[in-house]
Length: 473
Image 1 (cartoon, helix red, strand yellow):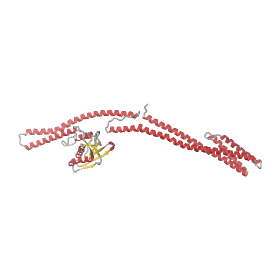
Image 2 (cartoon, one colour; image 1 turned 180 degrees about the horizontal axis):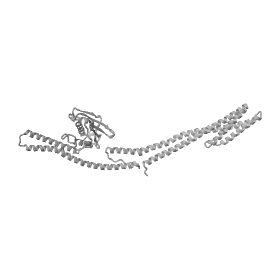
Image 3 (cartoon, rainbow, N blue to C red; image 1 turned 30 degrees about the vertical axis):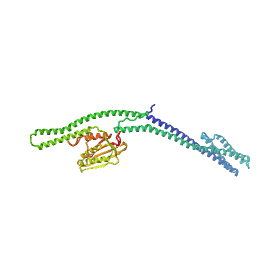
Image 4 (cartoon, rainbow, N blue to C red; image 1 turned 90 degrees about the horizontal axis):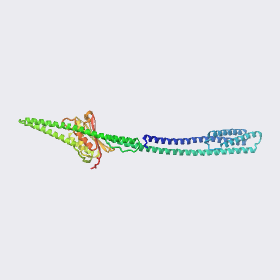
């Protein structure tokens, strides 16, 4: 039978509450009995002390034969009787001594003997020895019996206190065990599935659409994982459809871009040839030479466009090599150092401990990003290159930031499209960032851009330390 996570938690806490309630009830009962016993002892000590006082005045009488001593003894005996009857009325259920009725009889008999002694004191000059011996005997028996009762109750209370300590200690054991079991239940049935789902969702957020491992918990978590896997399957289908749509859209843009980029130099070449045909009879060789040189430049420009296009479309395997990323950055800067004007300050904050296995075309990525940054701050500014290890992602991040004019929001989503460029005609093919994007994707990395118009632009790239199914060279 499958139990929901809510049902499991409810069951666990119900057991916890029941056991805690039973433990509390047992502890409360022990404390209640102990309290009753303490009150009994207090009353029995009062009883015992009252009897001792009666006996003290009894002994004083036999020493001085003063009537007041007998009267005091009678008064204390009467108090003792009241205390004893009160104990029987209130605490008979909890007292150990079950023969207190006999003690009342003994106490009443002792009182009667004291009264008789008072009468004898009025009628005799000398009290008969028989009466004296009787009172002393009754007093001795009464005192002895009450002393036994008090001692017995005291020992029982001490034992009860010791047992109460043990009960309290033992009561903590099931509570502790149950707390551990509840903690383990929450770890294995709540925390672990949540951690698995959290990890899977983090991967999905990074674009890793692999199925989540199944969880056999028989509750909402299992249903949630099943639903998430169904969602991932649907996302994979939609992703493939989106990629296909993007390919078709890119193909359209690519065709349009190729036509546009090649049309300009071809038009220029065509115009130059037409002029040469018309002026072939004329003697202005210098003008003809300029037209031919211009046509040659346009041919070179067309060749550059074709080469860039071939680079963009080429499927290349990675030639991996383990490199120190700081060295790669320095090499890229040295390659274009002559193209960086003096009014641009280049700042490099790349640690020396970043090592990764990459294709050396990553250097081209750096060159392209730095070149674009130089163009963005052509009127003066700052370019900053930073990098840091991200061991939790098993890779590192590097950024190229410039303080240029920024990229408007309406075109920032288009900058990786083929043949898209904000440069003047003839200043760029519009394939640089597209090629850069492809190189990063081929390395299982990614590239993104954030920009604030009039302030700065930052390109952020992530690369893994190692490539799958490749050995470090």
